Length: 297
Image: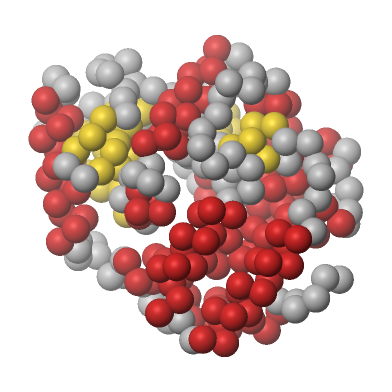
């Protein structure tokens, strides 16, 4: 097990106290993931706490995003789409514990899916298409500050990262971001998952299930499709067929490039905040610099 940073341990201790004050009786706060958020199973209860640690730094505390995840997952449940929703064992929040906001979701046992299986790729694509159609019908009232493409978030990440990365790399990233913002497609926006990569879908009781809706946002469908195509190309291509999306359209290419630089910035942010980060992030930066374009295609 990776050693916990003092900041992570403080967040975990504060969560434990706050969750017990809500009336939850658990024996162990078991860390499931420590990345953008601290995700903790309050064992043996079927409850998972999501603590906005790194996301809180970048997103003004992260409360609004946690709140919308609770709203979106509850609404999906009413439409017959099974996702890990708000717990019913306590007020799901969001609540504050020390300097961090956290929410409480039901714990669902999920198993990873093999990317080598064409059958899984098709099932993932079908489930994503169903999810996307349902979310597109959600009312405009399901909003948070910063809806749309994450320009403000990118700016905040760049402010933190500039002193930590080579000057030429920072200049290149800023140039690419400016170019992309200057030619943003005029696609229709509706509610999307926001982080639809292969790590956020699994199998539960024989059913494909999407999870981690914290990044749900009103953006073009192309944002989600570009994300899935990069992390699971065969599933992403099948989604394009099901939803009549041209994978080679200018909009898709634009969203793929924006998603790439956005993901890179988050990886660089992890590298300066998480003690478990390694040289892989440096390699990813070098790979991006080698492949990024200074001018539009």
